[in-house]
Image (cartoon, rainbow, N blue to C red; front, top):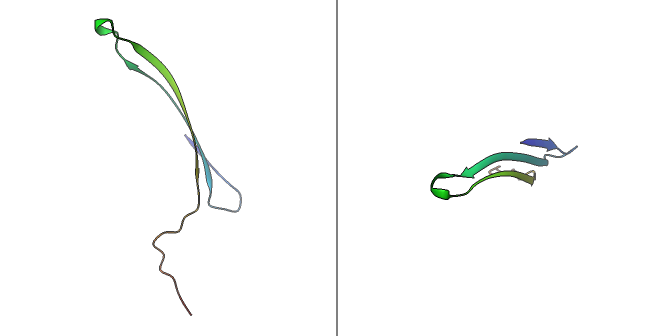
Length: 54
């Protein structure tokens, strides 16, 4: 996969691709090949930061 940063923020666009196969041909079962694409967005998040008050 690949994470692409957005300018002037901590946001990322995430892109991934997976190629594979599942199943078996034993006992006359089905074996299939697949291609999977994933797209996502990660936003800037600040967790567990102790706030300072004046």
